[in-house]
Image 1 (cartoon, rainbow, N blue to C red):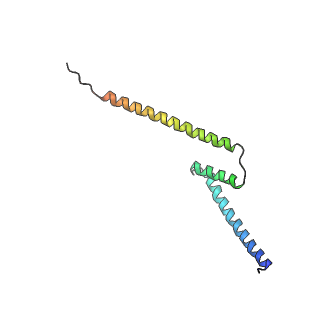
Image 2: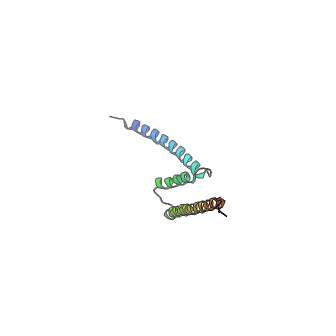
Image 3: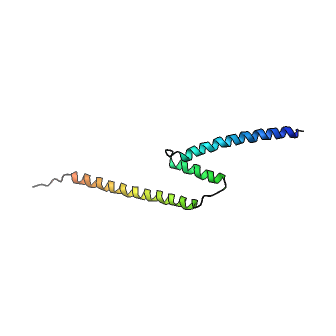
Length: 104
């Protein structure tokens, strides 16, 4: 049978090590969230993971997520429209450079 004081020492040592590792992990997450050169998706995932770990949802998180999705969809639509304009311009340019042979 294990001795109670020894068990407490082991638990205490584990708790101290876990606390130390948790502090390092939080430093890493903080570095990612505050690094303005890190990809926005990485920063957002880290931020939302923090809320998830804390069992809290930031006020308006669903609204923010929906706004992000709408923004991405809007950008995709605008890019598709610009792509179609560029293709049409290219097609017009090719057609205007073709010569038509007319017999006199």
